[in-house]
Length: 326
Image 1: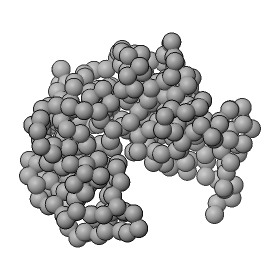
Image 2 (image 1 turned 90 degrees about the vertical axis):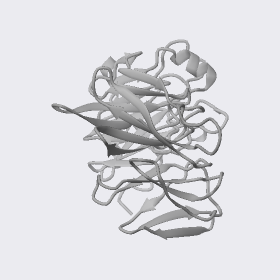
Image 3 (image 1 turned 135 degrees about the vertical axis):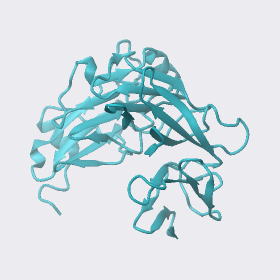
């Protein structure tokens, strides 16, 4: 065990002038380590109980006394996404959920960019929120259920640096990664799903753009049947383009993962039909052709992801681990 651990987060933050209420906070997002610092995101408990906030806590692994914290100014605004925080270089990107009773914008319904020290920024280049954020608050249709994903979309003179945010409002928002744009500052938005999006997306190259796979019934997928996997294609240009590339027949709430043979060739999109058909599905990444469907697996839970090694996929379930050779 490293010196300084285990660490009482509330006590450490209090020593640095922050008030953190462990009873009200819930940590369900994946953790991130960048340059020797552990970043942990927090939300609340089911039912939006207590005075919870969307927190990001940064703990240097070898100097735990230098803990740093950032929190939403309004109550609520949890960072619920199972995928946690995205990182580009040393910059952190995450999405917050609905705030509770906020009359003025208090960092909810937002995509936030932070530097490693987690210092708060009021610059519109460092945050985005939809112009109807207050309505999203009222409907609990927030962005914080999905991790915003960085996209470097190919274009004629290089790449275009973007962020894609998916929301419970069924929309996708494309943002300029270098200037998130503040309130209403998206470059493009589109309704891309027939139902709420709560997922961990996966990105891979395809054609002259990038493909983004996520768990939801796509807006342009057939309205009947088990169409629980949608794949968007994002293309650079003016205007930016977001189109549905294909849809996959999966019933369930697993998260998506992509494997390739060399980092970009022969992509296969994998998804578990967790709490649905409970099968492991594999689809050809460029066309959506189904390549594999397992027998039903026992003990799967929603938002579940896979682990890939050189030639195997592993699925953790209640009281067991499944292994697949691919």
